[in-house]
Length: 116
Image 1 (spheres, one colour):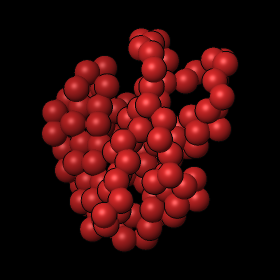
Image 2 (image 1 turned 135 degrees about the horizontal axis):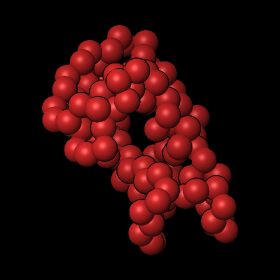
Image 3 (image 1 turned 180 degrees about the horizontal axis):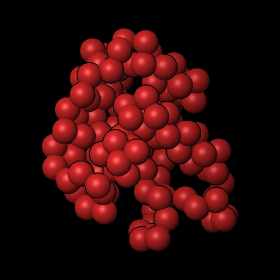
């Protein structure tokens, strides 16, 4: 379990909590083009128009929480979905997962989470 924060200027903060290769705080810097990729994906999925909040707790599937701020717009989304659950918001869960994966790819969290 970990969290990662990406700021618009490319500053990255990671905190490995448990079940990760590197526990504790780490910092990195990503290029502006990488930040732009994240922002573009957020715009493509209309992140700031989403309003879903997780209604249940499941411990054996991925849990994605995304907090985002862009100027005076902000959003908090809490998603648990394993692809089998009957959920009318399936597209939103898929898009949040894609955004979370993009963030991990762009930031390179694998170096801290799995060591790769």
